[in-house]
Image (cartoon, rainbow, N blue to C red; front, side):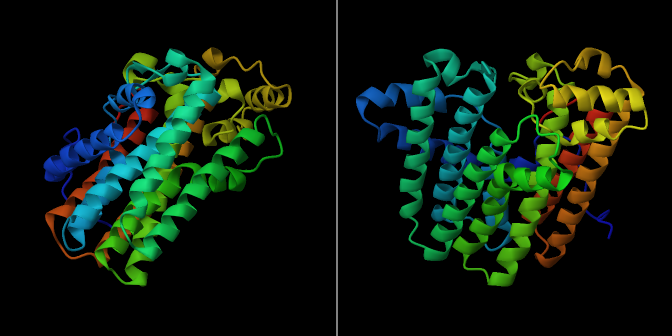
Length: 341
């Protein structure tokens, strides 16, 4: 099914202009939560929350709300807690990956060490859950809790399957569904729940969020192998060093070039030794990136199909533009010039 009737604006973050003032309210809500911490914690949280994130998940909350009846105060609180939860997961990710840069700023583990960073991530996650309890919707709270559990399970499964040569692509997709797509899914389904939408609509939007989250993680996996730290604003190249089997790595292990396939598989079996600089120069690497991008683009197309069930509105147009923007980012990976949201 084609969605050519949706405009392709081709402007950086154009799709978020519709909700610019509401995103500012979300940032203010997060800042207000920081004030609720005790004095020994507040200064750390202020530093953590100073980073200007892409606000992808809050953006999905607000656009979904706008497309299904209008943005309520509950949606602002939900968007804030989701961004706090995401920030907490990034703190833990950076500890595991030994990353020292995130959003063009030193990571908490680089500033204060791993132990304190983990504790601060836990504290931020707990405060996000406190904010969620104030929304007073049992179905929402249950779905939010399950999404948080999925996020944590996905991180555990990924961490326990490093350098696992027996891991399959199906395993990979299940891990990224949990650790990344779960928050995209709850962003859209949770917004619909708070709007009072019926179960069928909630599940359709949950599916759209899942598809977008999977596509975004594939993009991030490609970026890690291809990108430049200064452009991305974070430490890259950590996946292959840590032994994470991402989609491009699977395609490299399945390469028609037996030499490349054997080299990559042996690197996994031997827990290291992959010469990524040389691999990047090969046709196999370009093919692996193209195949990975193709799989992500197909999920974006599936995600756009869900938009037919929403009434025509500027918010629906902006949701479509979000998917097209991700298309462009993925295609730029194929061209060797990655861009970012």
